[in-house]
Length: 421
Image 1 (cartoon, rainbow, N blue to C red):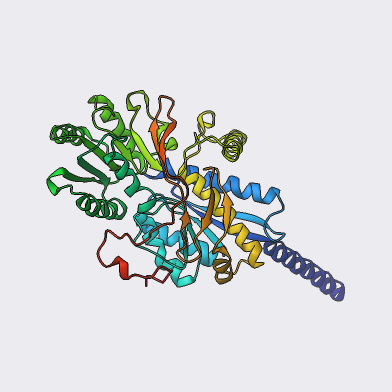
Image 2 (cartoon, rainbow, N blue to C red):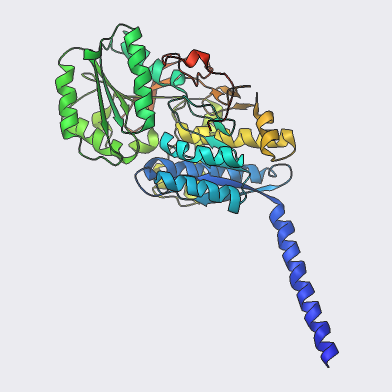
């Protein structure tokens, strides 16, 4: 009797062990992909759609057979617009969840928060948003724009006859590293064009700021001194009250055009855009660009939003950081296929020179040395329906300058990735 019980116990434990082995083998058959975006807090207005775009891209790749015969498995975390929490969640993704790559961050302060973690653990981050440059890490691939692919061309356009011949510039931003560094570069650039400090005003507001009454009144007062343009590096949900206040005070684009670097189709979904017609945004992609690749991309996104019953799916839109997310995930997948492994060092090497036919209508290239995409620059004018009409664009993609020539000493910095720590 005792012997029979022992045999049963042994058989049961062997079955449990086999189930455990089966689960381990099954788990090893997927490639884990981390998604690190704020789904709550002040940045959720911008970042939630990037999470959803990442999930759509992963679903698309899986439907075509995955990568190296394995399905991609998304691991989604919410750092909740809390910059120290970004670092904690990044460490969790790399050490506990064992992801092979992470797609995430929007603000530069969140990217700066996670950077030491990725460099310490040799993780791989794809960062999909325009930024201030002044960074070139071996553990980050930057699929958004550097200043010479957005900020500088936008200001050159405003100074041109076509863009309104602006002589004075009101630099309005959220108070953190991206707006301050970008405006440092722009101030130096404007000096090089003969614009004096008296013709440059610089104002910052905290994240989540909602009262723009005094600031818009000051913009109107400042503009009395000559042809003025506003350069907006306001981020997150503060854009809604800012644009509403522009409309309240009747500040029209024909009087003082605003060019935004962090406002796209997604941010305009919650605003009555009729009073904002003519104001501008500078990006590397707009939903309205007319080409077959983009037609497919937009249709695919709208169908995905409906199928997943995403909030307000009836008005689903694409935007620049969503396109950069889509391009980044596909380029990474191509590099993993080329390398035959998810090993970070080998994938990094395989990413150099990768190309992808992007919804922007251009074939984008990952630079062989500086971890940035070669991207076209577009300036769009807000339309009544919340879309943008492209009023100016470069002939083709520009190579990124991570180290701006308008910051002293940058000419001595290497044009290849080195750890920041």
